[in-house]
Length: 436
Ligand code: UDX
Image 1: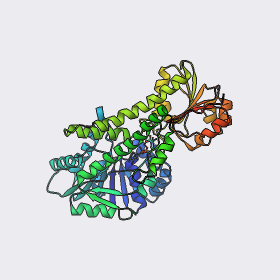
Image 2 (image 1 turned 90 degrees about the vertical axis):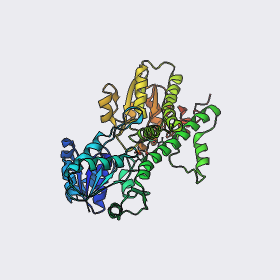
Image 3 (image 1 turned 180 degrees about the vertical axis):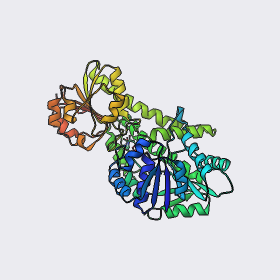
Image 4 (image 1 turned 30 degrees about the vertical axis):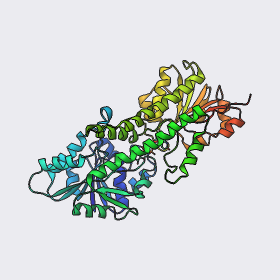
């Protein structure tokens, strides 16, 4: 089928190349012409494993083509996916101006039946608003449908998540729209859940908020473990073996970040409050998540006593491994706090340093993880990249001025730390200290 995608960011571009991989012909639209120049050469402007190879393959096969004109999207595909950004404004309210503009352009250029599918993360009732906008601006008596198809891909494993999803959710109210969506997803080996448009819209925010709640529960348990002497990994392991609870997204750390969880939790609370339903439980997820990082900072401050003029190494800047995305990254918040306290920072990340340099040009960007620790008064781990988990801790000890580690992701080998006589503070665990 011919499919148009409007908005070639993380969701749009990945969906586009994955649809091409499943045999569809795809037109990807974006208003950023510099980005399009890169994409046409098969270059991806962000880090996502596997995406450059797949993009090059389908640029070469011409199954993915590009345009800067939304009008072309209306002409090209029988199905038009809206994948433009919906940035948060205050307290979770989403800015819908990009989505509205696409709806108007679709309406003004519609000549034949089209299925318009919203894939951007949007507040509930957005499809209804898109439908009304198109009806208002349409010229003539042309049929169209509006559907919702929320996206569940994770950065860093986005290709795998898109090609082999747990499920595809489609919210659609017409038989024709449903049949087109079934054709689009015919090549995907997973259940297709057909719901009302309103339910599909809610499934996205509700799923992400639930996962954020689960992580936050583990983080709060970690705090309880710290004051009670229990070990959070033992606790969540014991709990997770109950299949009703499970182990996924139950790891304690320095808080969730990224482009979705923080935004979607706030948005769910906002939507609910706008509809007259208070959402204290959902608001608390966000507040507790923020305090998790502050608690970690206090641990560092309390152990180092004075941060002014201390040199600290930071491993990991991205909000999680396998991405260069810094949106809502806990490491960035920690860097702000440490800088305000006067600490000098030597930072390292396998892929997120160029993006960090744009926000913090004044840090020392290390050539490799060991370069970061050289002469530092402590090492702080913010992202659990595999190379940090596997690092030679004897070399780390030799490089540090003080053999002290703050492990925000419980990813450093505590047994080895103890053997080497180093000190380590983790999350929700007794510290490792050299024997007296
Ligand atoms: C998330 C959703 O998983 C995805 O379905 C949705 O489409 C977009 O938002 P993403 O933001 O890419 O994906 O990352 P994810 O892997 O979900 O991690 C989010 C945050 O939670 C990261 O900061 C991660 O470090 C943190 N996390 C995750 C934990 O702290 N503990 C865990 O056990 C799991």
